[in-house]
Image 1 (cartoon, rainbow, N blue to C red):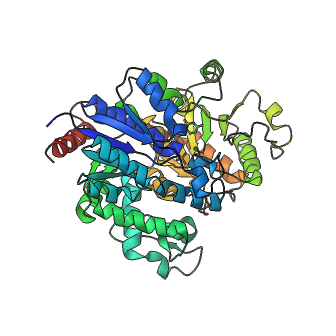
Image 2: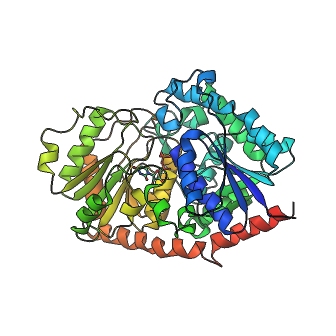
Image 3: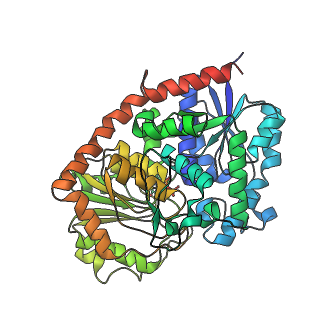
Length: 472
Ligand code: UDP
């Protein structure tokens, strides 16, 4: 057999594209040919990777915005900022099946790695008799919780929003409220999204296996549970961004231009003591209400700590009015706070020695980046499977504390008071408990680097997968 060739087809969203590009580079570094399938909007970082001398393939499919009724500018999930647009976005993605299959017919890859939200790719793979691997882009723990939720349907026995429930069979007792659970995924629903999630589950079972951006040591009990109790074939091959640590440029801005000059953020952080600065960033999709943004500002200031606060900006909205900002906030905090409006070089900031805590929405990429930077966290999950990832940090690794959000909401999140923000930040920054949390968090930094090196658990899992695929 010649060189093994994989098609990688990520969801059209930054949080899915970033690890997929890292995964492609990882495959290439292990002698496998990798081609990313995407749209013009996401082509830039892949072209940059090509220009840096990495032989990565790229096949572009036109995104069917007009055909699906989407406004022209909604070419990425982050830009679909209403429930209706998200639903239309899902339909547009499904329209990519035909051109995708054309590419498979023409280039005959040996396997496909595709995003969980592209369930129809399992049919495409079956048509051409090649394996399809699913990439969920989340933790093993979240995969296990989601599956046990489907099997046990615990919400049926919950009678009020304040009553917590846990799931039988899991390695730890993890408690949730029903308000923290995606209703369309785990309750009876008739929406388009609920139907898509059903297809996702079915296509998962028909797939060859699951690739996980995590490492065995981090979630050993959940990795074992996933494989032996839930019967899933899976390979832990992360942390993907550490597998390619040679490419520092890519590690910095990760596909989007940074909104702040390196000189500015770096010299600001250089002037601070080690472990003394709070870094607050909520990923690429989150949207807060103005009232909630106001509370975050007050809470950060009241914590008395220095902070870097990333304010997400919508594309094409440079002139957004920040009338929610607490009166005189920027002036008062000009020495203690650095606000980044737009895309932050998160990986680089997290790894700066001055960062003492990461206030995160628990998107899996951010969570893993925080863990690998050895930084304690204040967890503030908002939607998707983020409430599950939170538990890994607060209950299993015990490297962070929760801000206490109780409401799962994808658009316009709110409900956390400023006092909860400042209390949680102080708990992980000041005192004996903070010291213990910091010690535990720092242990993961070195471990994460070992597993991706030759002979490490993630290195070996990938070797086993490549071996298996070569024999297909
Ligand atoms: N990210 C970044 N700068 C930002 C915001 C996000 O580099 O200003 C990166 C972050 O490092 C992570 C990804 O975008 O790799 C976000 O993925 P995650 O799974 O954490 O959250 P999502 O955006 O999917 O909700």
